[in-house]
Amino acid sequence: MNPTDAEKTERVIAAQREYSAQRASGYREQALKLYPWVCGRCGRSFMRANLRELTVHHIDHDHDNNPPDGSNWELLCLFCHDEEHSKYESFASRGTSSERIGNAATHNPFAGLRDALNNKK
Image 1: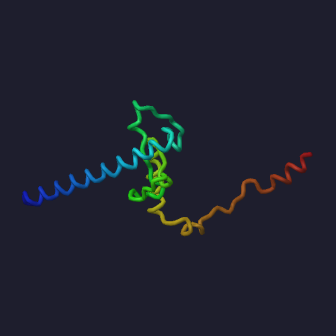
Image 2: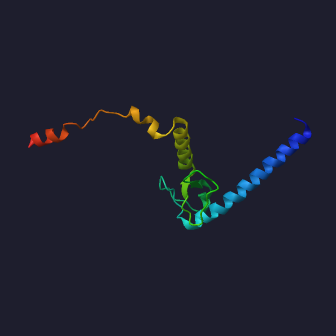
Image 3: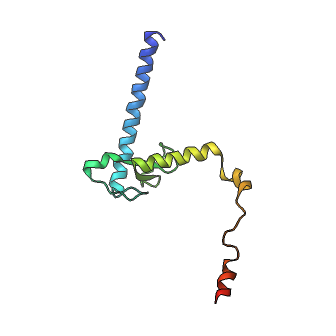
């Protein structure tokens, strides 16, 4: 890569980082005003001192879908946010649930339980 290509690449990366930071700060500030500072999954509470550990998760995974009412956001701690994205990536890589229906379990561990309990009386 010649120096002009490297400089161009650096400029593009810097511009993208600036755009991402501006976009994130906008919806993050809105979400922090709308919702209590509590992780929506684990219930951990946050204060100003540790607020940087509370993130905004886009429910539909579309970071450009930012309705002003916050209906596409939920506040998650760093750990729950990572877990949510791991689940989404795992689901996306394995396909939809309709493709896996054929492998459903057929064993019912509670079959006959009602009869056993009724005979006990």
